[in-house]
Length: 102
Image (cartoon, rainbow, N blue to C red; front, top):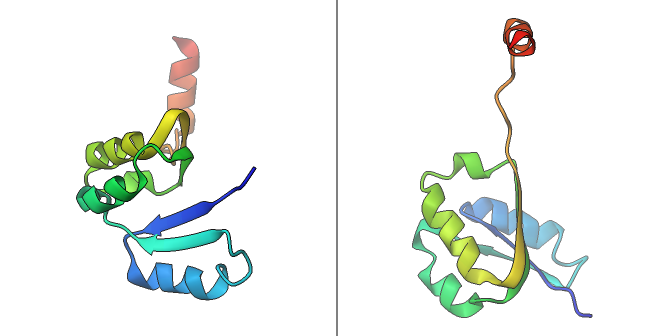
């Protein structure tokens, strides 16, 4: 099984950092700049080709989440998975007590 990892980010500086510090150590890992709201060429080049798309603690920063999730769906292969982690707001002690009493 051949594993290929593609990292994307809207920031040119972040991509340059990853290419400099991570790509030389792991040739199967590539990085490219991507604005997910303008991802037509990325979708065309990668339609139905990913088995897994991940997003860790950054999806809530994306201005156009529906366009981004649509992009993810278009590049996922049939049966592919989307794993995401977002930060939930902190629940204060009073809220916890209020929720527990319901």
